[in-house]
Image (tube, rainbow, N blue to C red; front, side, top):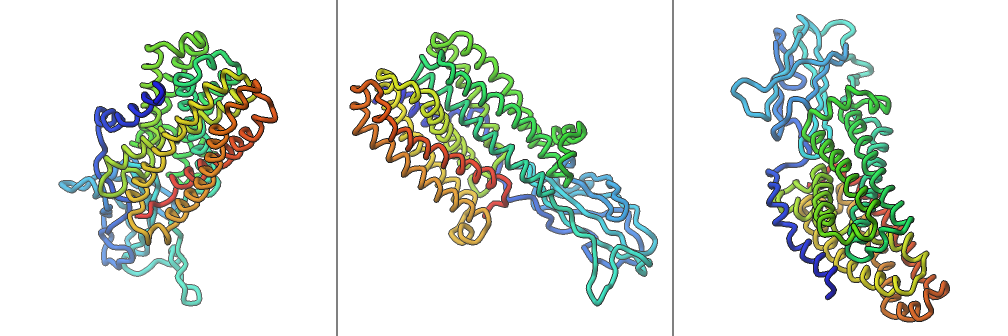
Length: 450
């Protein structure tokens, strides 16, 4: 076993210890939902209440709770009920003497930033003429509860897809250079890929903050650009995580700048590798904190599995990108002999980690075979698994080439005709990986199977 591979295995094995050093999350349920209200929805009251009490299935942050009147769109003041738990919210009302009072509520999940919403209507005395609820042909017409804008949701998925790809490209690229190809730090294509990964990661994080605000406030694309939207998101727990990720991308610029300035000499430096490892750990951890890994009965194990899953995917995908776009086009015999065989072993370890951690996450979030087959989350997970299976077939073809044809390619000094089949399998593998990342982005915004 080569020293780089031993270091990678040691990092994967030490992940639970590293995670324990920064603390484990508390148990969490699925997306926050309303359990009950007082008065209840549809209640007919003799006099107007001065407040409405909402009880959710888990503790909520008041900054993530919105209650607005249907008629005027006024936002109502909210507070935790006196002497109540943090899952109970008290809403101040200015109810009419007679008629209907209809409000819509929305709440942002503290763990993953998802928004849930609903509508509550109360009748005080006799309904007023022209009230929001009317009878037409025996059907009641009411204002529907707000839902996130489809365009905002699509933009949020795209931003997360970009963020995942940038994370893999940057983290996996740094690991590829540090463990397998230190001289690559002087190669223009490798340097350009790292800069692209860093820039895309920072921009995707900034865009995600605004889009997350528009998504949770049920606004449109323009709301994602408003400074007030950013201020509202940054006051919530998911917003703090996103802000921390943005700051880590800024800190990553120091690591990247040192590498670009020092080249191969810096990539071999123990001090630089420690700094790169610290930034890598922070980026991976903050990315996993906005997902579904804390769902289920063992949130700590879910978070550890998610970290291992992201680390394995980054080592695999980032290394694959550098291999396809920076190493193979050079067709240098010495690099092919050292880098390709080393990456093949690293990819095998990474895929093993991805599959093992993925099984833990699937059971943690989905929880049952029925949910796997009959929920949108489970069905997306099956699609991801199917595409990943195709990726593994392409990866197997690449590994077979390494075993049977690499020596010949080295002997022929990187002959184009000899290397071309390996390049094709790597290209197919890369394209399918982009599809896997797209499905992963959809999973983050989907309701968990549990």
